[in-house]
Length: 411
Image (tube, rainbow, N blue to C red; front, side, top):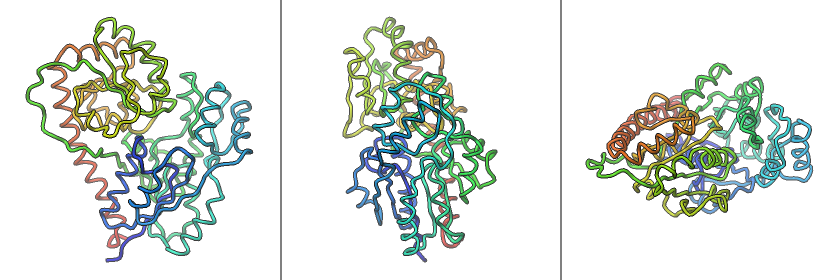
């Protein structure tokens, strides 16, 4: 049987898998590799930290191109904040500078505003040499790359998120939308370049199906966690909270919300409660929290913490897509308290496998209930594991159907 070739064009690395989008991409590509696909990974390096050696070892072929640089682009992107005009993609450091500069007048970006045509020549050369069976681009704002491939190549967009009017959520919270956002019309234009569109959760899938006439398939994320049996004896409720997050604007907003509106009531009612924090968000929290917070920064084995006695929190208020940190908590059987934004795509399990609250007092009450009620923790623990088993089976069917569709006998 002929080995199928797939080229991945991605602005995010697979190694280290220390962010939700990275973990999701790595999990997906591992399944392709296990199914016998030959993986050609083109990494568009924006300077966000990547392990080139591990990616070279993991994938059959690994290529790296520095992406989206130049003083003019930085200047133009700064002008976008002041004038509302569009500008190309920026490195993360410039994104952060613009965010601190204050919220300006933001207009939806054209779908190709972040696309750098300097990559076209290399992609064409690679395609001429190999003639790929499948091309997969990460994020709709890179969809223009699909135009470099003819009809003999199956074209896929892995969306991760819905980007139509995404900036509105940020502006409503007084935040500058430093990541990509566009209009529904422009997003539809990008989606129309693909044969297959991957949505990460069912809500996104329904929206994208209304937006375009392409085949939209829901492929979620399966954490690399063995789903164990339920704990039979939950002797006591945990007295520690766990928050895992990268240092992004939505996560910063989540912590601002938690510290200003949830934590004061919670610690007043439960003075002994402590919070362990893991990930890049610790850099943001340094100097903003007291000794009740244990800032762990980067840990060698994240999942060992998920096996500890914790209540996991995710007070996120901005975003679309699937919250990978919530998935990891649920697959580990942890009691989880999140918001309606955090529960997107998982709504039917809300109140059963995890608790949801948007009001700060209600969020604090949910945590308080779990801090004081071992039986409530045990109930969420058991239901979280049941959710994980059902989600795993459904995900397995979806990914296997996609792999079968891309395999030689199906093409």
